[in-house]
Amino acid sequence: MKNKVYINNKIKSFNKKIYISGDKSISIRSVLLASQAVGVSRIYNILESEDVINTLKSIRKLGINYRKINYYYKIQGNGLNGFTTKKKVVINAGNSGTLARLILGLLVNSKKEITLIGDKSLSKRDFSRVTDPLKIFGANISSNKKRLPVKIIGSEFLRPIKFTEILGSAQCKSAVMLAALKTPGITKIKAKKSRNHTEIFFKNLKIPIKVLSKKNYDHIEITGEYNFKGFDYKVPGDISSSSFFIVLTLLSPKSQLTIKNINTNNSRIGIIKILNKMNANIKLKNKKIYKGEQISDLIVKSTKKLIGISCPSHLNSSAIDEFLILFLIAAKAKGVSTFKDLGELNKKESPRLDIGINFLRKIGIKVKRFKNNIKIYGNPELNLKGNYGMKNFRKDHRVFMMSCIAALTLGGSWKIHDKDSINTSFPSFIKLIKTLGAEVF
Image (cartoon, rainbow, N blue to C red; front, top):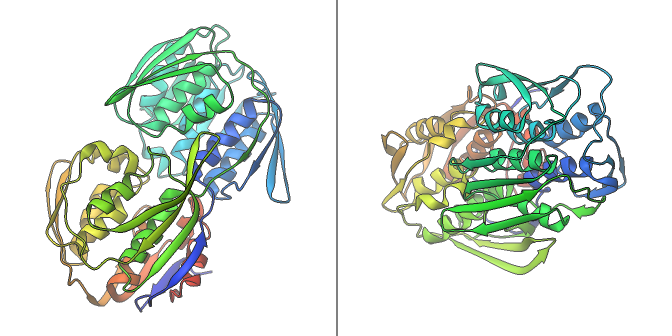
């Protein structure tokens, strides 16, 4: 079966309502926390992507039983000390940095050696930002020059720590929080602002946590060794997956799209704040709070007069997975868009900052770069002709989807490789854009 797509025509105007798959970050967290609960948890609307399936496979290797029943996953948790292994275990996180980093936090009290591996892309990423604090808890950890594979043997004598997270990484913060859950005493974390799904989940499960929010940092205290009961949870739609359809709509003349039941947690909607500063037309309707998370319908209308902006860097962490698609908007905006402090993009599944800049230049957009700051010189009249190709992007799912949206809105004839990369986060992506009228072969 071919692993590439061909797009030769722009998408026509549309007015539709769609549902997006479950949030990947929350799907992974719900499975991992269910594995630590006492009793049965039922998780609905789990994103059935490779990252989440690998999470389910990982807890099964650690002695946790689960099965799918109709529209939900039933997970039998055995408590904070419930992981059981008869021998050394190898856990394959695939492409998922979230799974790899968070599960290490849960292994700080493992009795047997556990080896964590991943695919070629994940194996290039730095794990010291997680393993360093976990060693302070008392876990015995070794790695391959700060990268995978990582071997971990837990400790029976864990001690709480004081930890400062300066990168704005929710993965690192959450790994420490999960380790704190298994550790007696109070762990104190000072964390640069980032996604707060783990904090919300802890509060919802009545895990003893205190969060004091300051301008740039959150101060978090967790009292460990609290056994919590199994829970029911319905995963809301994913804002990161929605972002591709938001931009598709903004750049498609006379189009409107309603995206139902999306997680609009304030730590995740940086893309909406940035786009609305660029004169986009995006509204949040039917807002409600579900177990601490804000859920909304997104109403998006096409926009002719997008304008360039100087993007406030404090919004970076809340839009970290959406910058590639934001670059596409900047390419069509009037004026210059400036983005700063984007070094974290090159620590993702691929060097996204480098790839994004090269992509913009490929389609004729002027870009200036100084270290991790860039200026994008927009062209509202951008209309592509001729042949274009995308390959050799380390099978990064977000690069693939961004390329598809570019082809459908900017014109030209495109051949885009590594279609299977979408299985990482959004397996139904192509099927869904076809329901809007896209011609993808």
